[in-house]
Length: 314
Image (cartoon, rainbow, N blue to C red):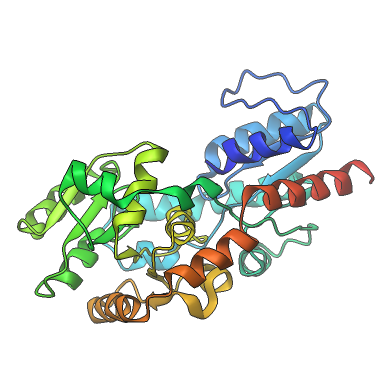
């Protein structure tokens, strides 16, 4: 989504943008190649190698956070843990080939410098949100699902998003939970459904228009992930004036400050308390004003274009 919206709003600024997700794309004739994502680095490495070979400057939206704590504290296959650390070599190579880095936050930039000792120039371009997420209709959601004033979590169902801990945190509170997103890990999804015991509603996926109504109907959006940068669904919920309880790992606090409530992903009590506090604080309107004033795609496109010009002027 970050790539799609970046393209859309750069086009409005007069930048000619083609989007490609295939390795066979020929980069010759382009002024820049803009790549996304160091976390899932294998494809990014292949694209960066080709662009570098053809002498095209590379702009890199890093979308990175250190996954070490996640792999250390979860029951995951050893090969996944080893792959994460082994792929750091690819990350270093991609960073070395980029002309400029576009981290989503200052804390992400600092994490890159700390972990990879990179001296590449960077320009922070925040993750942003479509203003239309402020236009949801809670009555439409109620008519379709018969639910109101529930806790909502939007994201793929996977250990990193930590929905099982969220289900356990809400047990006994009387708060209904709605999970929206595809099952990314089948066994984990089955554990979530078993633990839900009728208190959790699973919706496999929704269009953007449907999601707007879901955020409008929710009492709070909860994202207790092992890290977020800061989570598109957090920004969408905030734009809909929905209070937020989210992980403190990643750059969430840099975006939301005191307007959100934070939790530790490995602490069930912490997750529960962040939800109860968020429901009590009711900071939805303040969050909406903050996000729509600072984190819309118009700003991201403008900041991205500034970074492009820095590279082209070198």
